Image 1: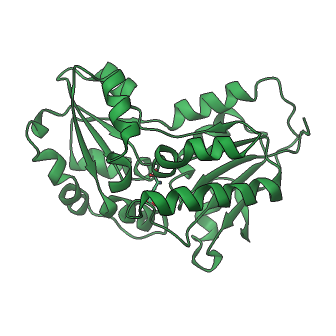
Image 2: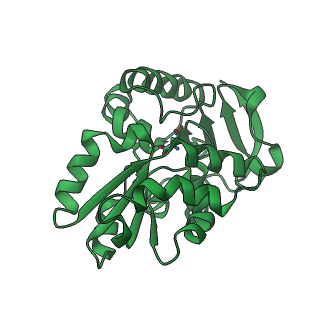
Image 3: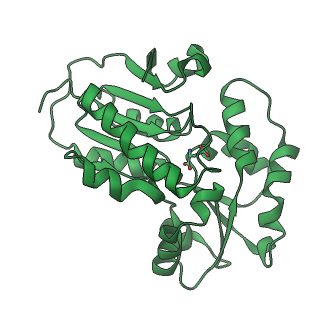
Length: 262
Ligand code: DGL
């Protein structure tokens, strides 16, 4: 294993940074390539066919170019639709990001949990399967919100995001039958941990489950014993639309010091 071989994280936009942060905390010497398909952002309003065609092709190009030791699909939408296709196409380990329904069900006292994702994620059979396996005795209320994805992205770019706007985006979940009994919400979109403080203010008392730290532990487990460089190289952010990349000052906070085009 080449110590310089990076970890590759992939999302439609800045959401995957909520997976990158706990990953860097566990693996501070890991070289990082963070790739965002921001030319096609947002994924959540696209069709299964578009995502299933786009994601494996882009990750394939990134793997050829950067020779990562492991790829992380740091996006629930892309993972619930295209994880199997990507795994079949690559000969490196691929870690997916799928809704953390199991820990949410373990935590819920009311047995009513919310799954907050994109429109595309919440309609996936993958989510039916997770709910049936891990939350069979819970009422699982799903809500897909492209507004929240846009708000998370805007917040990262430096725009103010109001609690009222987030409360309005959460209203369909809260007003669903028994929605007022939800005590745990799965943040089933990697953009949403970036908004967690505002979501918590908009829905006080509810517990928010972020799958990011669990994904980071999985990456650490899969790379255990592998060599890393003696000092961490600057992270590289790769965008499919680099002219619309987020401000460099925001990326630097995640160790991403160089912006490139794919
Ligand atoms: N961050 C992504 C997810 O976890 C998708 C957001 C989007 O592009 O709609 O689902």
